[in-house]
Length: 363
Ligand SMILES: *Cc1c(COP(=O)(O)O)cnc(C)c1O
Image (cartoon, rainbow, N blue to C red; front, top):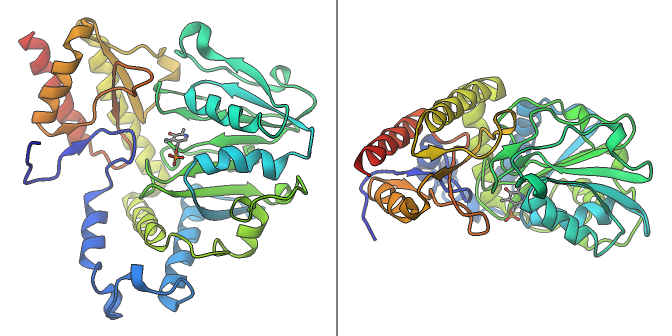
């Protein structure tokens, strides 16, 4: 393995790179948090220090995303996948149905899991056009009987997203926003539930966040495993059991960093600019191509291909040598992918484009 004496640009889909100032802050507080003589990791979750961290983290998340009063916000341990099971169990009574829009592999997995508990239905599948676009869903596309409509707002593996978040008159919208939460301004009031694993835009893996409209809490009335029970977790302020304290502390640092940068509006502008630089280059090149149709392209995960597929392995190897890490596509999809989350600086995009130009000239 190559050794680096600097931080590299990590284009991995997740766990992803975190902002260097956040890592530096965490390092500086690691052994002795605010003159307590211990790490925040070593503090009791019922202690005053951690209590403040948790309160701060929850209120910063609310503030950054403009979460309205009639929504609750909570942390869970178990990642995004936990919610694939928790959503149907918390929202659906026995026998009730929900609609799933399959725009990629994560939506498919979520639906397969829900099917173990309830007769949920597929209302869209992008497979006929290889998931290069995303539907415009309205009331006309959904079932009367659906208790919620489920979407993956940004498709991490395939590099697409909903450019416009669907809006339904009555039916609550449930969204997995793992790979784009906090990257663009969204109207929370359009959603019944938003959830996200932390390891793409928030912090360490294994942690997830939930935003839920209050009237949906306890809807199913079912027996739900304790740690998946949204009502129980919220009632206990994300601390029914010992929460992942250090991960929540890291999330708080990321939220502070984001606020200091100017919040969601500032990061959205930056993300648009970064993505445009990369896609413009891909579209102008004769060696590379971007398969997702323009209106649906993700600003977080840029999927691309080489016209000559046999050069892919060499591309990845050369990029790794230069400290451009994790550019191979997902094992199920192939091709190449640059994940350019909030933490990826513009300099990282410029370094990648520079490398791609050199590679194109060398083959
Ligand atoms: C990464 C990812 C997941 C899986 O997250 P885990 O925390 O590993 O469960 C689910 N959905 C989307 C959209 C993702 O990007």
